[in-house]
Image (tube, rainbow over all chains, first blue to last red):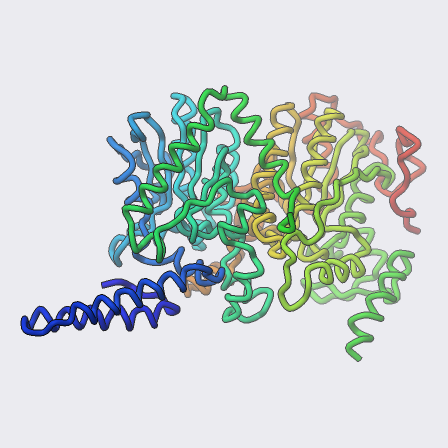
Length: 320
Length: 315
């Protein structure tokens, strides 16, 4: 059973009808509905294409947050071998919103780090909906140091609504933890590639996505603030999220123009959740080619180029 | 009426305040409500003489009080693209900018300067909360990079006074990108072995705290300053729980190990002199050697012809 987004309602109707017909046919073998069902399938496919051909920024936010979208764990399971999770920040706790550890990517040992949102109520609570506390960023810092020490590339998978706004998180230095993680990203002398697979929410995303190469899935977003948050501040009305999403330029396509992302990874028709395997292997191929671009660079050169990239960022607007 | 309150009155106020002759001789303390004589309040760096409440101070006034004799040279900040996203909410971004420039008389939300503080050469940067909430956009990023580059060039410490609601939403992702950009600036200082001292002032929140404002070698805050990543209202809404008294205030952060010191504004200058001189391996400052801020007669003569008083001294 697919989870439909509000703008997919007409699609849900058609797909539901086709499904109903087939169920009836299964119950009554004399019925011949295949032609009719096939026509409905075609209609659904056309509509899907129509809907996804030009998604508005707000609809992209919805797709990026789709509960069935592949999450960090899915990518790690499919694309890496010998994944060995490493836990804890050696200071206070292990934050389950951030998963990471050693793994092999195409046989090459790497460190992989990412936000995990969870896929059902129980796992969502365990992973705190992918919203990290300070311990998550401190664990990431520790893993990046490990990678730097042993010369392993770091791959990060970003998918978070943002850092967790909580009392304990604030008391334990949420902002300092994010700042240190960003700082560590800029200090390590190993290749650092980041993929935004869903939501790139504000500081929580920057802490992992300050990388040599940043790629985004076609319907992922990356923003300084959620459209709802922006709407409630600037429009004084959180219902104006459509306008805010438009104004913030948070889509992968706009961010490529601004130079924030280096590559946009095409998603299967109807979004990554409609064909998870295809989306995951597209991400795998991109990771491979971006890592190849960085091969042979010395640690010094990697750090220098990474810093230069961020210092130069913002010199071109959208107009170009 | 609207036109008068929104436009005419601020204009008149700004003309008068530039001439240092306030139209109203009394201001009310935001903390205790005591009526304070304007000049006395100014001399006390906008700290209430009755209850010690710290009110906002503009970067220009702060620098006048910080640098010997009130003398400092502004450092040029490269101008970024204007309105890179063509952002429009209820107002256009360039219109909001113009309004902020008119209201504050400043170009943007950060002022960068070099000069001497207790005969200790420094570079200083101060964020202006009155300019669009001190928000961090490309200009603020450029300002911090310019400050760091100048400090490295002159081999001087950088002292940064933060005050901001967070990132500038009107610059969208490019404001977020100031987090890594300013972090690079801090790294330049660290690699050059130069002190980077952050003074967190009320309020410092959001992406600003999650980047340059929390990366200082020494972290000082002014009393009762609100310092946080997620603001108290956001947390209360998310958790539906009442937060403890003093939550996210300077003293609370000090208690939780997030700061080195909480120092009243009136004692800040002496403390900064002490700390920077030790970190720079300079001899202790001799008390008599410290010219009083704003007292031009005692000040070190300007190093170069370019240096000029930023504002006429008071009195």
